[in-house]
Image: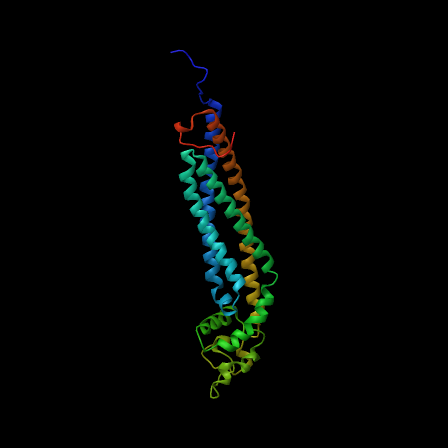
Length: 265
């Protein structure tokens, strides 16, 4: 059969280039999946570690950053699953959507990093404004009681600003016959009543709690920035694959591979 000049045969170089790009994207997907699992793991760890702290102090900004961080990890896993479905099919529309998902996650991770970075400068101020009133108003009155006891016992502190703050609490004022001057969680030896200064923690809970939250925000910021840098690699190679498939679509009949060019000739 004579060779037709109109026949378009894919070049070996083109096939190899697509294969190399796909191999890089598959490797990237595997690493990306590990980072998604890592984000979720770090997010859950920080949630469990700081739950009592940010709920007692009503730190809505901190909880928003933490929840966004965990949501980002879940989106990473979804993007990996979609990528493993889109890359083998050689469909430019699917690759285009995959790139958009990566860009969306990149923007979300950057937002989380920015929020965490700037809020860590203000978290101590928020704790100072809210913690003392929360201690005095909520202790022995609602579910925050356990969190207050956890904070004081775990951080070895007593009162948001000073142990003497407890005499102004609704708990003390509402119980005239109570013997304790401070909650038992303030005691170095909880089995005895805290009626002696030598048995009470003197550290301020505000300072210790603010330090822990600030460290958590730094961790969230660092992880988000690291993963956002990794996103750039995926976007670059995703665009390379998209452009290569678009170029092939101009040379071959789209009906042979199911592609439809998104870029006009």
